[in-house]
Image (cartoon, rainbow, N blue to C red):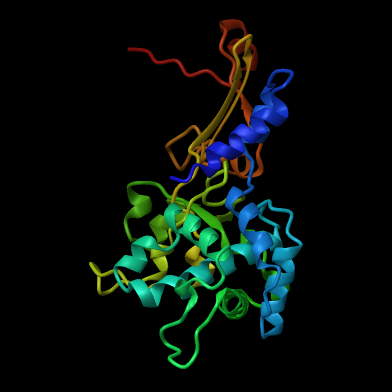
Length: 302
């Protein structure tokens, strides 16, 4: 692991922790959506010359991006769509299956792409499919922008629809009947897809796997997904907890779904929106605070 999340957390601790860290500041850190690797990559894309209007839109949005990945971010969507396409262009033809499937999008590939951008004449930029031409970084970087724009337009529509939350979603799946393959049961037991902030490698690590876009050598029936599902969340923070040990009753928590495991219960999925939007609920510890906060009481009688 290249340590991007750890480095970002250290940066935020340094920023907020000089006078002690509050529960609110820690909660804000947990929800940080900035991928640190983009800070290194984006300045290296300034010379790109995409050939299409959609490619130019991708370039402009990356250039104007504030580096965060909220659900409404158009810059985050553009950068991630470009990063996906440039990795496919760099590695698919040279590595082939199954190596490219395992390599593209993993943390080692993040580091290598950054190194290649700083070395624009490296032989990895050359496309072996064009025998009469030797490509350099600007050629592949620009082509990937054109491809990203074309794929987004085909999958979700025009540029006004290219927001991060439109292509980066999470579905909260129940582990038994919610994974049964029976449509009506899955509809009832599962919740989603829901737009979610964060991304792979951010502190708010809502992770996805580019393997979904490749054929599965172990399953000939598998159909690779397009760019509208490449960023579907596969892993996410299961809960967020903040505690000031000098004020235990001020602790805050949120989980990904709800406190109840029964889909007929109102608490089955009532924390999803809080989790998505960065809110938390109180978690009192002392008996008096628990009694004061109680909304209902369950008595178990043997």
